Structures are given as C-alpha cells and as structure tokens.
Image 1: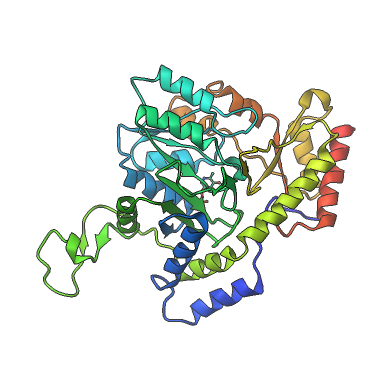
Image 2: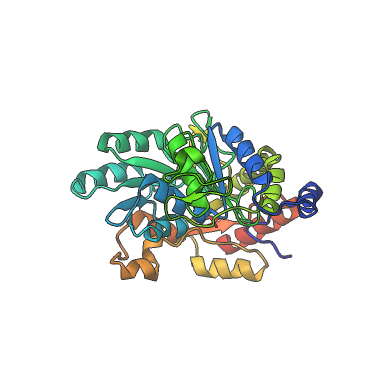
Length: 385
Ligand SMILES: *Cc1c(COP(=O)(O)O)cnc(C)c1O
C-alpha cells in the first residue's frame, strides 16, 4: 500500500472544465480568472479577490501593495511554510517571528503582546498570522493588539479555506486588511499552482490588479500622460507577471463546487483519527470552540517520554510501510537562510519543542477507510512496542 499525506481530488467535471478552456480562444487573460475570483470572493464573503500564479506570489504582491519596503519588518509564525517569511525579503524588507501557542500551534497572542512591549522601538509594519492546519488564529486578540499599536494585519489563510471563526468564513477579512489563499495541489482546493488575495479594501484591490500585470493600467482615468489613442496603456509602477492562466482558473473554479464536501470529509477523517488515537501516547490536535477547522492537516505530537522509539524511527518506519507521513513545519528561523540572518536555535522554544514531537498523518478527501485503518494500525504498533 502507498498512501501519501495529501492527494488532489480531480473529478471528470474538473477535467471537462479544463478541456473546455483548451478548446476555446483564451488560454490566459480570458473570462475564467474573473469567474474564479468572483466565486471565491462570494464564498469567503469579501468584496474583492485577486487570483495569482501561486500563494507565494499572493503574499509577495500583498506585502508590496500594503507598502512593505526596505527598512520595514513583518512578524509571523515560525510554524509556517518558508514562503510567508520569504515574501518579506522579496520586498527588500525583513521578517521576524512570534512564538506559537503550545496548544493551538498558531501564533500566540500572549507572545505577541510580550514582544510588542519589549520591541516598542522597533515595531513591525505588518503582522501575518498563519491559520495552521486550517484552524483560525485568535484573530480577535491579534487584531486588537495590532490596532492598539497601529500595525496592519494580513492573514496567511493558505490552509484554511472552508474553515470558520466566530461564525464567519476564514478569509472574510473582518479582523484583517486582507487574506491570502494557496491552491497548490496539496491544499483544500487546487488549480495545480495558484493563489488568491481576498480583501474588502478597494484601494488595495486596484493596486494588486496592477502589480499582478507589470504595474500596467488600461484605465484612462488613471493615466498620467495625455492619451494618444485606443492602443495606449501606462505602466505606473514596477509589477510582475503573476497572472493565473484560464486553464488553472477552470480547474480551481470547478473545485470550488466541492469545498464544503471536502471539508466535511476531512472533518470526518479527523474525527476517526481522534477516536482511534485517544488511548495512545500522543497529543491530538486541539479544537478551538470559536470556529471550525478546514482540516488541511492532522498533526499529532508524540508523547516521547512514553514511547520507546524516536520521532525519526517512527517517521522512517511509517515511510517503509508506504505511509507518506510528513512534518509541518521545520521552524522557519532554523533554515540556513535565516540562520545566516542571525536567528538562532532557542529563539522560539515553543515552535522548536513542537517540531521535535510533531508528525503529520495522511489526510485528504479520497483517503479510503482501509487506508485509514492501515495508517492507524501501523502507527499504533510503532507507538506501543
Ligand atoms: C502552501 C503555502 C504557502 C505558499 O503557497 P504556494 O501556492 O505553494 O506558493 C504559503 N504559506 C503557507 C502556510 C502554505 O501552506
């Protein structure tokens, strides 16, 4: 048996949607990108959505549009994919981290409060909470703190479409200026590669649309020079080509029909893991009663003092059995790039302690019950003998 930790679900409808685009006039810059944007914006309950070529591109453009520039810093969680922090360096700015809460594995509001006090002279320009594994951060507390210090908040919601917080869809931007989604093949819905920025701010939206396509506008009311004719466009600032193709947008749009079904199935599998692992020496994911997770990931922590094998032995044994367990995440500040910037082991002890005990189990909508039973059985024998 070969069981990956994640596997995209592509249906015949998805395939047909992509084939339809391939047989049409527009492979890119056609109508599908806008339809995909409108559908996700409605789903999340926001005014605007900007589709881009990846979640990383979404972070980069959003940071730029917010005004992140050299000399400024973002603060994010060390328990994230490197892209959240890297995008700050792509802007010529810098990243720093706020340690995680040992129960939620998300950026800790208490650590944030502490760090804001001790760094009163070097406050960040942006705070970027990451909804790890699909469970929302404590957005109310984080946004309150940020407002008190006059700092903007944008969310990395790459894991979390389909989740809720305080009765609102994650990504609704009630507690932030904008939220970023990823449609990489392992995420809740996929366009192969792809990402999106959600916001209620029209000014941010206009700027993001321009930055996505070289900083160019075709809207005459924005022109700074006389308009010589209908061919004319102006490049107002330095942008990129971060567009999503219509081929990708067709796949993503088709997948939006199943966000609810996907999250329901993920939730069901998570509940089965909860039941099956309840008597084992592991710490199970904590469920925040203020919301519901999209269950992008099911991460356990090993109660290492009660287990004979090491994290590495268990990881390797499961791989040998064909089970593609994973580890989310190596704390970002421990990467060589960040070490060279001056970060050190011990800087964020909760994220590091979590990392030494964490294992991500396979979780995706197409995981069959015999596969699930096999994972549980193999894990159980590794933990108990
Ligand atoms: C996947 C992911 C990203 C990057 O998204 P890509 O689409 O792969 O570029 C950023 N942040 C987090 C938390 C992610 O999981």
